[in-house]
Length: 228
Image 1 (tube, rainbow, N blue to C red):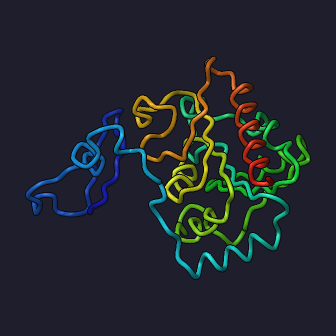
Image 2 (tube, rainbow, N blue to C red):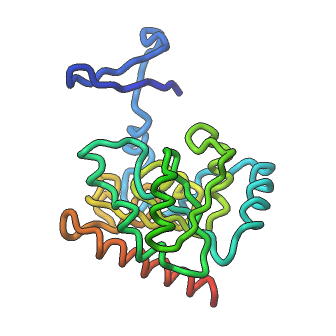
């Protein structure tokens, strides 16, 4: 398994390798494995728990999270770390998360890997909502710890970004507000490759209100089921 970087120079996509390509006999993108291993949609109807965090890190983060939790633990991420005019259309602004962040009796944990302190302050001012972050955690680079933290969540609500995928492969119920249907849904109503990731798609472009309302309803249903 080898990594490569992709960049654009003068609007031309370039693939950059730091290893000698000519040493290989064959090469294939990892996603091409699907055409050999998952040849029918029914082969995707399986548990999506693909990753298990380190046991010691699980114990550490279980204690840290439990000590400050009231009610269910809800991990949230409202945008990607990459920003542009086009990408920003894919994410609801933190000010539009009211239906979710107004929920009481739960504890919200930020899973954002980008600087977001101003947005957390904004959420507090708008919704009187505390979103917990851990200042000593490198959310972008210390992935083993991030997986261990994410594993403590009862449910995750995240934009289509890395934190949603992390929760998905850990088998955590994941609600994903989204602007468009993705090719990786493969014609289903969920992320076919990671079935516990449930996208909520905009019916009217640019209108996040019904999306966030549905996400809030799903969160409330989840809380009700857990409290039964």
